[in-house]
Length: 234
Image: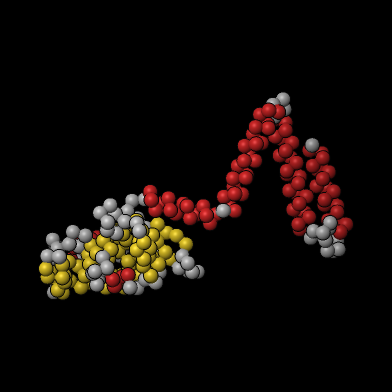
């Protein structure tokens, strides 16, 4: 077999040498012909090696060949239906991941970033965001005009709450409260990132959860509540 492979490679090289600049060899350009000869030689070499290792074990050889054929068909099928497989994977991720975890999926238009968030058991939507690079969980509140942070979340985001002046009146379920104005460097939800976001920092004890308000949502391309999911596009 070794001598046969050497002869095959030598014959291919001789054909390339004799063809010169004639253009094609058996309908192939010289580079493709060379690749075909080299690939064929390697295939024969591995086939001969496998045949030697399975000598006297033909049944096992057939069984292993069937397994590899099935694996090859599965890979081809997965590639052929990659869009459908990707869609199913995203749906499964949306069901399995905890509420608030952003599931990234392909946008409708080129360059669009999109995420889907599952509703919490209590019926509300919360999202795990990055505020100035720090992880902060916020309740999505379309009734809040501005993004509002709890003092603990503000400190996690690098804001010095001791220097804030709580002079901005805000309406809460318990009446009027006061908050301090702040500007965030960036707020990110998955791949969606907005820079220079105006925010408020509530006084201690006013909020149980930080709020993702309309000044963030309005800067997105769209946001949509549909059944168990909230979809954000940017």
